[in-house]
Image (cartoon, rainbow, N blue to C red; front, side):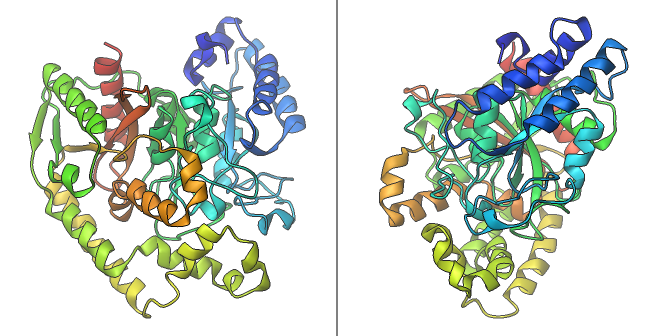
Length: 450
């Protein structure tokens, strides 16, 4: 991607001024999509080019459908796109019939003029935080340690598509961290929306309670622009003044989740920049987060129980042998869980969502997105036990927010001594997405870009 048009909003301005046109942009994106192995499971060139030609006419007539008309986008292969098979990253699902219609979120993006160029790779069934896939290959970011690092999961291909400049925006899903983790590992922005914000139909489920969607992009502003486009609203044009804005950090998270020195150092650096900008940053222990941690440790992961329900029939069929063994093992852990456990977790979840809102008291929580930089891929592919351990470590800081349905924005916070990205996540109470996005954009404009 031309670095001058590396963001969706920059590309939109280029369309408006005539410095770029959708047809050439989409052709270029389709070409780049083939240059990173295992990144896309399928592409849709005929549809994309037809839509690009229609978009070019609208821009010539100064009548775009939205500011993002003509912007190429990639979709995680959990979303139905008319005429394509939704594989969910699985060899079993690859034999399914093509989807007859677009998922509602895909259709909303098309109505706003965004142009889908294809469907990106992922962890099978979206059930891993590391992004390995033995069926379609594991996509890797060629710009990080010569491609030796895991992409993060489960929205692995989506994050690399944005980070490598294939498209300005890629859409992932997040059940336990699957937008935020790959965004963190690849040095881009990922927005986990509250579960009620976007429609879930037409999207292959993992957990009916925790599943949600969100964009991955190079900027918070692009995530906001996508959100406005698919919801038919107008994107805010002014960011909040950080002076007087209230933030909180929970120092106990650092020790509880063995957060690395580089991640901690860059988190503290961001906190100092916020204070320099006039923000108020308090440090205090969050009882709700500790309770969620203990609940997951003692009673299991709600998303895991619901994932087993989704895939129960498959696990009992001959096709079970075709599932990635790492994914199958994790799914099977929920088989022996007592009946009634899910109902108990759902009831506790409602209590803890209310508790977190009260404890947060209209502030924004800042925490590491992941406790480490992207680990090396080869050792994880070779050792299933090491994979399982690192996978849980990787998900540890994002799972509580998913359980509490916090809208969250993962943002790059810097790099370690080897140039590998670190990340922080900003979280607000359930359905406080608009305020969260405004604050994240303010941080992007007033600290990272200052």
